[in-house]
Image (tube, rainbow, N blue to C red):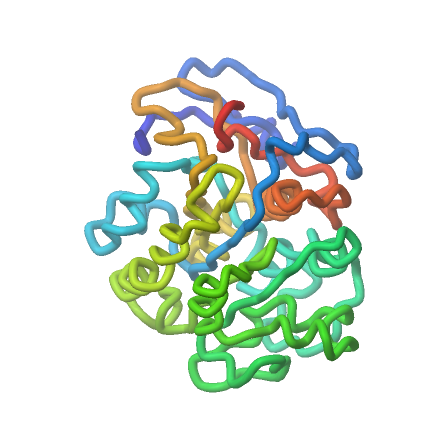
Length: 315
C-alpha cells in the first residue's frame, strides 16, 4: 500500500505548494481545497475528541516499513496514511507553530517570547470547545517555562500563546502526560488534545524503537477507550514535526502522517491503487483538526490549506 510508484509534477508543486501530486499515469488533478475560512463540515464529520501525537526528526522512509517500529507501522497499514505529507521548515519550532497558528512565527528553537497571533487555542475557546496539551515530563500543571530535563519548551506550542500565558485558567490546560490516563478513566477527554512525548520518547534523543514502544504503551489505551473507540468518538493523528535537516523538500522534508480512529478510512490508500495524491503540510492538519472539533475559523495558512477529508470514512 505504501510503496506505490508515484510521479510528482514538480514544476506545478514548486509554484503552488498546495497543488495535487499525481500518480504514475501523470494525470494532473487540481487541489480541491476550500478557501473559505468559515465553512464548517456537516455534523456527521465531527468527532468528540481529536488528538495529535508529535514525533521528531525522521523521514517517511526512516519509519514506514522499519521493523524497529512495528506498532506505528501496524496502525499505518490498518488505518489511513498521507503518503505525500511534508513538513514546512527546519528546525522544529516553526513546524509546531504551523500546526497551531498556521504560521512559522520563528525558526529559533530558543525563542521564549509570547505569541499573540490567532491560534488553535483561541479558536477552540471561542467555539466553546475544551482543550489540553499533554506533555511528557512537564514539571507541573500550568508550567510555561523553559526546558527542564527531557521536557522541551519548543515542542509545547500552546505554552507560548498569549491566550494561555495571560489566563491562569487556560494555563491549567498545560498538563503532564500522566493526566491522560486520568481523563480516560474519568470520561473527561477534551475536544482537542495535543500530545508531546519527551525527548527520549519522540525519537529526538531516543531511538525509533523507543518511540514505538512508548506509543504502544501510552497511546493504545486511548485508542481502546470507549469514549474514543466509537463512531463519532475520536480521531488521532500521529506525525513527525520535520524530516532530517538534509531533507528540505517543501521546507521541512517528507514525513509520516497517520490517522487512526473508528471513523477513519480504513486501509487507505488501497494497495496498488493509482488514487491521485495531494501534497499536504502542517496547515492542513490544523484545519482538519479544527473541522473535526466543530470549529469554523482557521488561523493563518490553514484557512486555505487543502482539506483532508479523503482520510475520513464515507468520503
